[in-house]
Image (cartoon, rainbow, N blue to C red):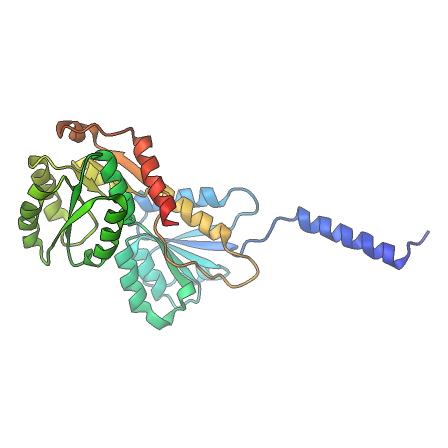
Length: 319
């Protein structure tokens, strides 16, 4: 028996709907080129975590790894939808390649990204260049400061040419955390220790923020020794500082940065050219505490998990 045309159309439409439900949604990105500043180390750690996260439920975009190079790997770029540049050198090389592919930077400091974006200028539309910054928002640093020094009233910070632009954000975060902020500003490495000598007698501890003049290989040891002699803890921005003698730090690991990058890629809407969101801070902070240093300074820091919860609350406030 032949079905009436209307009944046939209804059944065909129902079958088509079922097929649409059964098929997984296509990703906007089908292939990603991972450009690594160096082989091994934190860059490979990022790449491994990125690929593992990207592989999870549904059809996963493909990835291809290449080393940073001033010469574009044309064969690798062919058929790709997005470049993820891991590290400053990889980002610098990738934005210089003659390709319209959008570029997402990872494991890059905010200042380095902003300088590079300014250099690129109008050669790239804004939605084709973005990054997940290594830097932590000031409020996270101040929340951790409060966890290490719950009775503290005054925090000190030494700013240099790179970090001076963060002063307004630091003051706003300090007001939100109800901590008074004392600031010393320097223009050269030779001014760092005198500034620290003026600052430390007036504060409960020191906030370390990334700056190429203040915190460099030649100054870090002296800063940590001086603050320790003054019995003032340092709240820093990397695990390596905690290993060297800072009381605590809030930072992002390569694996956490990779998780955020992979989530960003999977969330890009399908069906149109890839448009990246604006640059952003890390969404997943980590905390490290040097308990030996803290105890020697007469401090009783909370468990890492509790300190991390306080920092994560600051993260929620930023959204």
